[in-house]
Amino acid sequence: MTKHSKHYYEYNRNMSVSEKINPKMLLSKDELDVVDYSETKTPNYYIGDVFGYQAKDIIEDFDLSYNVGTCLSYILRAKRKHDSQIECIQKAINHLQFELDRLKRNEEANL
Image (cartoon, rainbow, N blue to C red; front, side, top):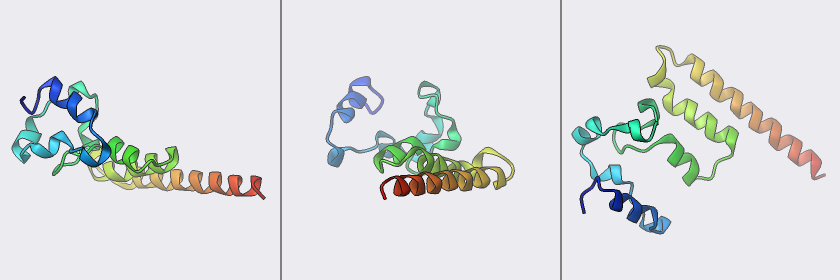
């Protein structure tokens, strides 16, 4: 079974969380540079350089809420998507504020 075969990825998908290994961790830095991400439709600025983690995988693994997950996505891509990080950092701050507002509403509703 090769690293890139369909069966390899299906096998990993069926493994328990404690057994899972990100298939991209098995690739060298040079191999990561040539991986075709067009199949996943994930922009390169959402994929880490060293281990190949995708923002969506981290968000899912930590079971983050929409606002916190979106904030994390903006932070992870901040240095990569635009010439200036300011827009992404501001969007991240906005989503943290949305999450604080949501949490406060939920606390008030439970009183």
